[in-house]
Amino acid sequence: MLTGLPALGSGLGHRVELAEEIEAHADRIDWLEVITERFLFAPADERERLRGLTGRFPVVPHGLELSIGSEREPDAAYVEALAALVADVDAPWFSDHLSFTRTGSVDVGLLVPLPRTREVARRLGRRAGRVQEAVGRPFLLENITYYVDMATPLTEAQFITEVMEHCECGLLLDLANLDINARNHGFDPLEFLDAIPVERVVQVHLAGGVDGGVDGGVDGGVDEEGERLSLDSHGAAIPARVWGLLAELVSRTHLNATLVERDQNFPDDFGDLLAEIDRARTVLRSRPADEPSGRRPVGGAAQPAGGT
Image 1 (tube, rainbow, N blue to C red):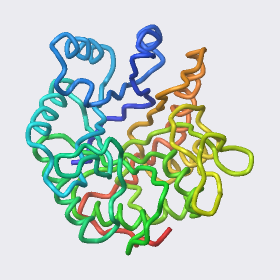
Image 2 (spheres, one colour):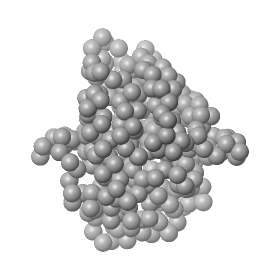
Image 3 (cartoon, helix red, strand yellow):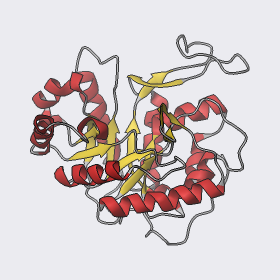
Image 4 (cartoon, rainbow, N blue to C red):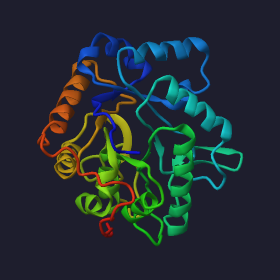
């Protein structure tokens, strides 16, 4: 299901605070990602505004509340509405997070990391496959940040790889999340890339957060050893480390899309975001045209999955 997907290019996450500037600079933005839940059960006028965006941009829904990792199956009404939304905007794919946000009837309100066991990974992979089949478009699963790393049988990279072995879905690799997790938990992000099936990565997220360490982390909190944590805030410029990870990933595999995310601390000059979109596009295009794809067919021989 991942073969033949369009190359969307370099996009921006649509936010109400950015709507006017997005319209004014539509020629500089290749595509838009919208938050699924904002439009899922929206009134007719909101859906009409969304259709207006699809007349100018390719649009991809990105979800927060599918809760693919909950004990129960995803809510049937949610999945039905999601399929209708994806069809309405003619999205080439849709995405959500490798996490759970609901336990029983309780909405946790957070993207909660999952127990990293093979049993959970297999169950999640099969479930993601059923959601993909119900919606009828490719489903991309996104890695999240986590601030407490419980002792589990699998590393994050091994867990993601195991999930992918049990579905035909793709990956939305959030490089900011990878950078933050690597710094908070002391692993090498390049070894993480070695360990996951990068050929399944269709799209990436790019963002800046709150730096930890000696010189940063004013609002970042501390871990159990008193070290400052870096936080995923989507409220700062994309750091050099994340740009480096994008260049590394593009050197390894074909990507269909990059997406700049900013959820708060919006810059006074929208040109700052346009510059990031331009830079991502330049990196995306740096892969030689005679290397169209590193993506193996789903179900082909897997690469060894090392630890992180």
